[in-house]
Amino acid sequence: MSSTTRLPMRGRGGAPRLALVRTDDGDLPEAVDVLIEGAGHAGLAMSHFLTRAGREHLVLESRERLGGGWQDRWDDFRLVTPNWTSSFPGFLYEGGDPDGFMSRDEIAARVAWYAEVVRAPVGLGTKVLRVTPLDGPGFRVETSRGALLAQQVVVATGSYHTPRVPVHARNISNRVAQLHSHWYRSEAQLPEGAVLVFGSGQTGLQLAEELFEAGRQVYISVGSAGRVPRRYRGQDIFSWLADVLREGAAYGVGFPTAEQLPDPSRRFTAMPALSGHAGGHDTNLRQYAADGMTLSGRLVGAEGERMTFADNLALSLERADSFFDQRFRPVIDTYIERARIEAPLADTIAVDYQPAELTELNLRQAGISTVLWPPDTGSTTDGSMRLSSTSSAIRVTSAGCRRSPVSTSSACCGSTPRLPPRSSRPSWTARTWRT
Ligand SMILES: Cc1cc2nc3c(=O)[nH]c(=O)nc-3n(C[C@H](O)[C@H](O)[C@H](O)COP(=O)(O)OP(=O)(O)OC[C@H]3O[C@@H](n4cnc5c(N)ncnc54)[C@H](O)[C@@H]3O)c2cc1C
Image (cartoon, rainbow, N blue to C red; front, side):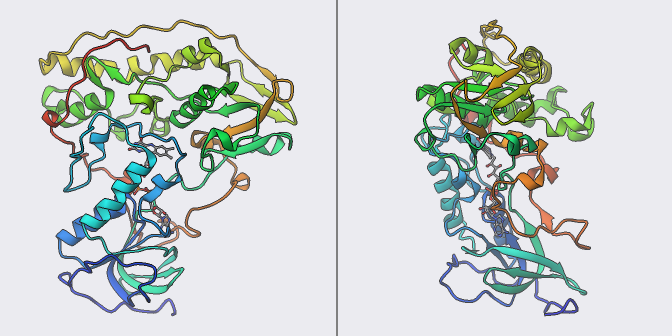
């Protein structure tokens, strides 16, 4: 089909396809009103709204199984966000454990369940390879199962599908196994010996904990991620964030929008670390060091067995410690005060352990057999060092497409999150948490 192809016009009120399409269901339709690329949380939510609006559409998903990107997580993965946040448009979380943290299989199953209940027309095992604008309205969409035309295309492919590592990885001794967290499933998969984890964001610290609890000696090259307490003033930190987002404006408090940030680069700040494991808890690097993990500053060089680190560990720990006080605590405390909420006082206990700076490390001498790269390290990547690519072969960007498909990425979405009412979220009983 040439680029002069014109899309047959279809009315907005065309009957939506209301049955799940499976890989063995034969050919794709020749044309569709709206084509959604990706059947994760975002793509399915879009399908729900289109169905409600009576818009014909089709969701194409490269995987053979429903469940979205969650299926790529490691075996013992737990959500960092409480279960009550795992709501879908039209379907708030109504399970019996709103304050728990779902496992990988539970959250993947929930996404698959949503596809069924909203009767999303999903074509599984169908990868979108290329989206080309037509001369007239619409797009030609090439997929692994043939081509079709679409009036509009929604890109809902998510992120985190392409494991990336810093350029230093290529200089590390071949003796050492290097694994991106995308491919990590469990501790048993790693060769015997100590593990060096890069990055101290949510994934890095959860994996460091998991390995340490399995008896591994663990080294962490600490990055720039801050941390927040799992619970603050009587409830999970996400409950406070949700309350402020939903009700804060009425009390003159809120978090800055992207436009209001003092420095635009803050939009790319690593997510603050905390964990949903074992009922949810803080992840405090100072506590880890006191317990026996070895910390270093940021990686600056690798040559065979020799790793060199910046002497910025103390600074990184201070920044992680102050992150909550600077970005969150004042907003939450002001909200509590102005909304006259009866919340217990903060009862956190500071950990003041100060680990020594480690600026050089010989991997062999330290008994390190594995280097683990969590997703947080991707910001310093060199494309040539990609270990693998599971993402779409071709992404349409505004630069390459005159009429850009819609992106559902939350980074591009300016809409206000819809949150469950406060009353549906039980409060935490106050207890002591280390920060
Ligand atoms: C390690 C880790 C931990 C996380 N923990 C949390 C957490 O605790 N809480 C939380 O809220 N969020 C968490 N997230 C983020 C969360 O995974 C994403 O925000 C969420 O999955 C986004 O949903 P989505 O629909 O945009 O993308 P996805 O769930 O990634 O779905 C996109 C779908 O598009 C498909 N696809 C991609 N390319 C193509 C193509 N070319 N053709 C067809 N289909 C395609 C993919 O196979 C996938 O199924 C975490 C992310 C990571 C990496």
